[in-house]
Length: 133
Image 1 (tube, one colour):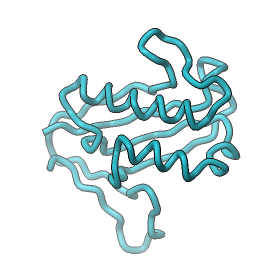
Image 2 (cartoon, one colour):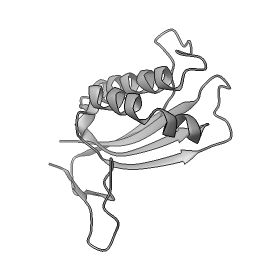
Image 3 (cartoon, helix red, strand yellow):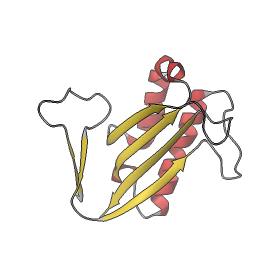
């Protein structure tokens, strides 16, 4: 594998993410922030955080596959959300949507609450870095 996910001693035990993605080779692919748009450019699930998160998961899979990779090639994901409460209140269905694409694979992940995203109907956007062998 061209990268290694690490959880160094001295850091808290991560739940649902890795602390470090050490990239040692391969082709690095930067995936732009994927918002909950369908292939027609329409926002999926207006006002529904879980539906939007699910669409973003599918978009991340499509994007990395378009580069010749697979979801487990993501070394890093950065999640931008507009409502942390919606995230906490829906952890179980969000986990299910995540596992449908990534299984039990957890790269280095950062979650950030933001005031607003580019499209005001979007509640979540995720960008990533994948490493392809």
